[in-house]
Each structure stands twice: as C-alpha cells, then as structure tokens.
Amino acid sequence: MDTFKRIYVLGSGFSKSISKNMPSMKGLTDELRRAEDDKYPDLMEFMRNLSKKSNGSKELTSMEAVCSLILGRDIFYNSTVNLHYQILQNQLVHWLYEKIDKAAKAVDSDNEEVLRQFITNCVQPKDGRKALVMTFNYDLLLERLFASMPDLPCCLDYVIQLNSYFDEKESSAGKEIFPYLKLHGSFNWFRSPGSLVCDIDNVYLSEEHGYSRNLIHHNDIPVFVPMTFSKQSYLEGSFFNVLWNIAQRYLEMAEEITFIGYGFPLTDLINLAFFLNFKDKIKHVVVKGEEKVKKSRLQELFGKEKIVDEDAVDYLSHIS
Image 1 (cartoon, rainbow, N blue to C red):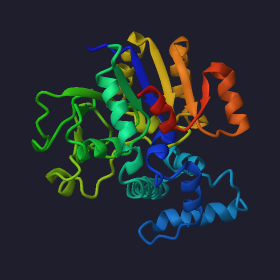
Image 2 (image 1 turned 30 degrees about the vertical axis):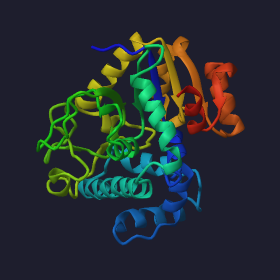
Image 3 (image 1 turned 45 degrees about the vertical axis):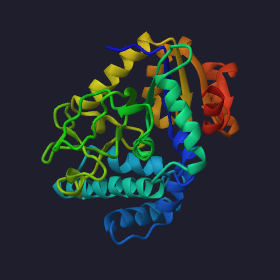
Image 4 (image 1 turned 60 degrees about the vertical axis):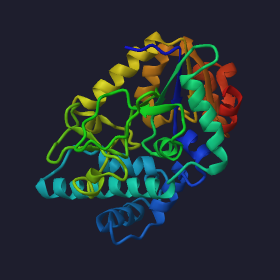
C-alpha cells in the first residue's frame, strides 16, 4: 500500500469554487421549495403537503431536512406507505443527480491552470511528499478536467478496483497515478442491476461517453450518499465500508491533512468524530465566508489558527 505524507480532503465548497455553476445547498433548497416538475410528481406533491402542514417552515423544507425525511425513513405503517416512499426516494435522488450534474458540467476555464498545478504538485511534489486527495463530492468535475487535458503527467485513479462492463479505459502506460478517493460515491458509479445494497464486487464504473453509460445504466441512479442526517441505509453493504477503511489506513500514515471547502456540516457528525481521531495532523480547514456561528464552531473544534477563511482556488494557488 502506497503512503502519502499529505492528504487533501475536498468538500462542496471546493466544487463551488472551481465551477461557478455548481449549486450551493441554499440554492438546491430554494429550487426544491419552488419546483414544479412533471418528471417528479410524487416529490412535488410531497413538498406542497410538507409546506402546507408546516406553515411553510424553512426548518422542515431545507434540502437536508427533506433528504432526511424521505431518505432516512425506515418505519412504515403498511406496504402502501412503504411503496410510496420508495417512489419518493427514487425521485428525490434522481432530482439531486440531475440538478447537480446538469448545472456543473465542467471546471471554469479560468481555474484550469490552478488545478493543473495542484494536480501536478500532488504527484510530482518538489519536496517529494506525494499527496492523496479524498473527497465527499460526487460530481465529475475533476474527471472531466482530466479528459480535457490529455497532456497531464498523471491519470486519475479511484484507489479501489471497480468493475467494468467493457474495456473502455484508455491506456495510462507511462503516467503516474493521481489517487482520488471518493468517500461518498460518484456520479459515474452504478450498482449492478437487481442489487439491493452496494458491495465491493457489484459496483461498476461507467465511462461518461462509453457503451455502458448509454445502455445498461442509462436510467439508473448513480451510487452516492445524499446529504441526510441519517446515512445508515446508504452505507449498507461492503462497498463504503471498504472505502472508509482504506481512508483510515491512509490517514494513519499521513503527516498532514488539509480540508478544502469542507465545513463539517451537522449532517456529517459521524465524519467529524472520525476525523477528530487525526486532529493533531490537521493543518488547515479552508472555508470561505462561513456564518459567524459556523466559523466559531470550527474554531472551537480545531483551534482558531487552523481555520482559513479563503476561497478554495485562492488557497490552491498558494500551495501549487
């Protein structure tokens, strides 16, 4: 197993920084509250009823709350309610996938060079301390950047061995590896048809323009963990267990950990407890423009000197 002295952990603020079209949590919340979409009739009706019953409560109709109410529910009074929530869960996750992936198709052109330097510095650092990148994001912004820059000195690798329906991957002979560990899944990962949970042997990688994406997975939901307060049902099976065990081993061997665009939201308390085990290795938590209360929370958790109020791209430009 390779060792990496530095680890960068990327959150939604990173993706928002490199793609101005990436929707924020507030943006997704606002859009869901006012959405009227014939493709998702049950979800739209759920939102109307929820708003009516709660007198338009912003607490219950936030993106995180709606995800928790629909995706986290595991008690049903009868089979009809169970079936109804299966439909709601399918529509909500499809809606999330569509809104995020269609909005943020690519890295902004004026950020490409900073990212090129960052990627190169991870695999060819001047001081010899190679870096591993972990992320909670499921978007394909970095994947598409690699596809658009064939002259990069490295190829992106997910660290875990994923299955493939076809031999679609281009040869990476002679290139170094840019390790990219996606802890909450990815928009190009899919379960094999009929699978109820994600196991390490039934998750498949689909190339964006490959045969499998246009055939067997055309209407499927990618494997990713939405922003719910309870994620247990999405973590069933061996797949995410393997991912997080790999992450722990790399974190144990690392000397320095930096969080970029990740403010440890309240939906991720389990993640917070996990990373606090490596608190002494944390160099920076880079967040831009956090509300005073949220920033104070981070300062209390990690120490004021470790919290950097800076845009992700600006921070990367300093370290590349």
